[in-house]
Image (tube, rainbow, N blue to C red; front, top):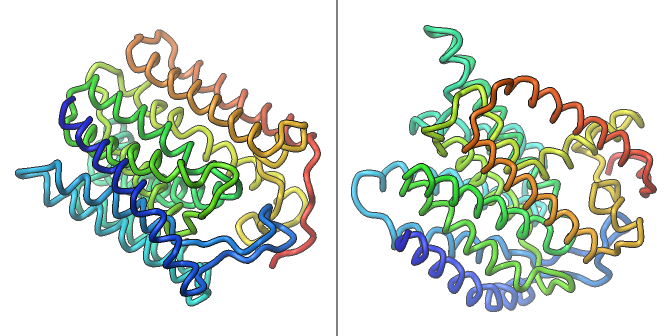
Length: 346
């Protein structure tokens, strides 16, 4: 517990302190996000905030860990570094955007598998190599999906940094409840770095994290979802816990994927103002209000995840069906809300 607090404090203060000089560096070298019709800001906004998040996380983790787990953690941070660098290069227009989805994210996921970090769901039901292969496939889908979801969720001030802070807090709490010091330390670092950056990123933001920061956070959250082990929770329920903690990016990606596909658009190639937060903002919540409402839902689902991890369920599959049906009903409801329709892929 004490180690987690120290890790959190190091990540928080490091990110808080580094964000301002990183912002000056981005402005000096013209690393900025220019406004256009699909964006909400009206003047060039410095990027590279993800660099401060990354430095805060890495410094906190390295300073707090000793012994045998260090090798695996360094491997995880190495995969996160790949995503950070890829995202920064993409922000600068130096890489084709599909390299992120089809090269960098799968490579990061495969790194986790090589380190022994992967799902253990299908192998419980299907013995032998078939079950292991299915677990690896689901792991790749999970890591790429969550990383991409956090990337496309980064469309409003304070949204990704706040959601990541809430999710990492609940992962840290779950890890502490189950005696996972390593996972709790990693989650505390992400929590502190996200919260430190949120100080400068909440509306009115003075800096954006950029795609590198969003992908780094998404990857770290996906990794935490894989590493958390719920010792006293049956496997029939345990698989739902990380999904609930990360319900916000999963729901938003599902919403825009269904909405854009229904309109004949390519979901990941036609960005626009049709996300959950945009639709909430149009309900007179405004940008701040929409983000705060989403924070509230993130906290609700995090609390639900903790409760489910502690209470034995007689019919877990029934709950899973209820949650899926509720999510699809929410998608149908949000699809009826006003949003700005994009016309074609950029």
